[in-house]
Amino acid sequence: MIEPRGWVLYDGSCPICSGGAERFHRILHARGFGLAPLQTPWVQDRLNLKTDTPLEEMRVITHDHRILGGADGLIYLSAQVWWAWPVFAIAQLPGMRSLAWGAYRWIAKRRYCLGGVCQLHAVPTASHSAFSLLEFILHPVRKIIVFDQAMDGTHAPFQLWTSLVGIAVGGSAIYGASLHSLFPEWQFSTGALWIVLSAGLSWCLYIPALWLWSSRKFSTCVQASLVTMAYGELVLTLLAILNLIIWRSGMSMNAGYFNVLCIALSNLLMVIVLAKQMSSLGFKPWKTIVLWTAVLDGCGLLLFWIFRQLLRRPL
Image 1 (cartoon, one colour):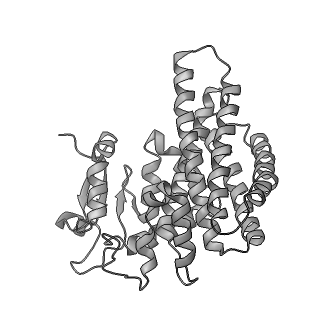
Image 2: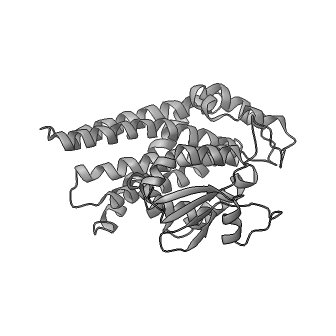
Image 3: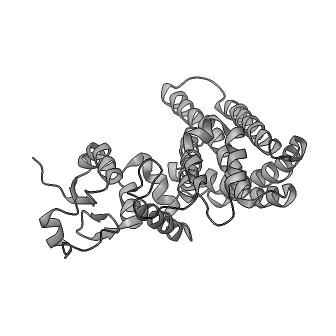
């Protein structure tokens, strides 16, 4: 057996942590990492952990023997796997590491939550039992009504939002990386940043505009927009796969026009999903479409062009 050059250390009493370790064991082992629970005696000796020390974050012992904790450890691991490398690149942007740490700490405090009930931090509100990612994807109109009625302004479903943001960023990054097949002078990371930045900032402008015009709760506008993004990212992820197939197979077709057509279909799907959600809350569909065209599409195209110019040089 090959001796690991690094270690990924996790909370063995946490079902989510143990399940993640089991799923990613082969990927990490192939890159020289062993996995062990933080409760293992030699791990506690190595990290100077006492038996009663609260286990607040996972640890990574790197190949050069550094010890990284929490979000820093996950970011380091993402750089070791080619398909997760866009996560590492995005984490280098200003403010993104702090955001990653905030999300990590929030999830870590609730990692013992099972079946919607948290053993450590139970939230005294019935609304969170309705906040299922799959339900929102399958029934966006019905669930946004439930969401709008349940939100009282004192709690926000950050775990659900973290999952939806992860889908949005991941899908955009994967599609952006696939643009290497259309623009050979671009690296995978450059294309990923190009799409993530232009799309992400456009939504950051659109959501406040939707909130101001619709007069709905800000959290409701955030939720409706994040669910809408998930639909678009599904199309972009499939498009990324097709881009790679076209590129590797050497098929003779104009992939540029093909991408424009698919992006238009993605855009149409998203505006329909968002218009239906907002219409169920009393915001007329034509207003959603006008705002979409003026703010999201307009800003998106402008930022798309700006970041393409700024990122022409490979990272």
